[in-house]
Image 1 (cartoon, protein in one colour):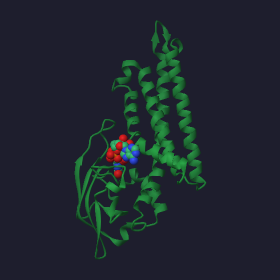
Image 2 (cartoon, rainbow, N blue to C red; image 1 turned 90 degrees about the vertical axis):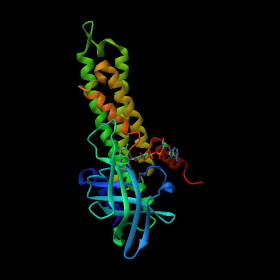
Image 3 (cartoon, rainbow, N blue to C red; image 1 turned 45 degrees about the vertical axis):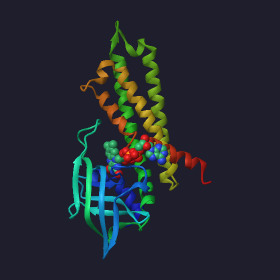
Image 4 (cartoon, rainbow, N blue to C red; image 1 turned 90 degrees about the horizontal axis):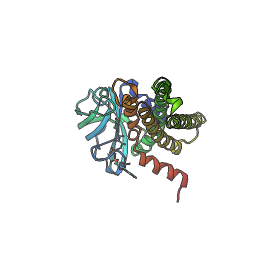
Length: 274
Ligand SMILES: Cc1cc2nc3c(=O)[nH]c(=O)nc-3n(C[C@H](O)[C@H](O)[C@H](O)COP(=O)(O)OP(=O)(O)OC[C@H]3O[C@@H](n4cnc5c(N)ncnc54)[C@H](O)[C@@H]3O)c2cc1C
């Protein structure tokens, strides 16, 4: 399977009931620590191991899985209906109860040779390219989340009154928060468009995708936190959307790679090779 078209396919896995499985119980960042292995057999590969925190692993039709093949990492397509694909414990998260996510086990799962994605040993490179596009798509969600947090905050600041005056007009602290929220959102949005334009031009976006995710994860946390503060006690109430927006913002810190890893990728991109 050609892995440029695969990248586009993987990014849309949320809608097509696909899943992508890299993370294991002991690592989500370091390929050297992967324990799931694929061993050569007649006409294909036998996969053994387990993956953790995998979105849609309990309901997907297909999964793209990254395994050790000797010292390398190789990507495979696996089918959930086949023998040896076993769905494990489901996870529950603070940001949503509606996500299928959890463990999956591979017990002597047979993957034919033509289910290798790219070539043997190309898995990590494929993962990095796929995640780069994924980080950009993911960032666009948070521009929307930020816009919603600001709209709600403006509305609240104009309608909530203190001694008869709307808090947005009365309190400079509220105004400072609104102004910060708006400048943060515009920075996120402008960088997102800049990186998307690079994708359209076919330029290398590996470092920018990481830096974009870094910016978005930090700014969306501030925007949604400020929105909660502007709403006072209502900001913590389940009846108002703002608490939910803050919970969603938290996932930007981890999903598609931790923030520290984005820092590492960005700095390495800036410094170049030794
Ligand atoms: C809601 C949700 C959905 C998810 N969906 C999927 C999915 O579909 N598929 C999938 O494969 N995974 C998925 N994950 C897992 C996610 O990708 C990992 O949790 C993430 O990559 C971090 O891995 P980890 O939790 O193992 O942390 P670790 O890699 O163990 O890192 C722990 C800490 O060490 C730091 N650290 C690690 N390495 C370095 C380094 N080299 N330099 C500096 N600091 C470092 C990290 O920043 C972090 O703070 C999902 C997670 C969540 C919460």
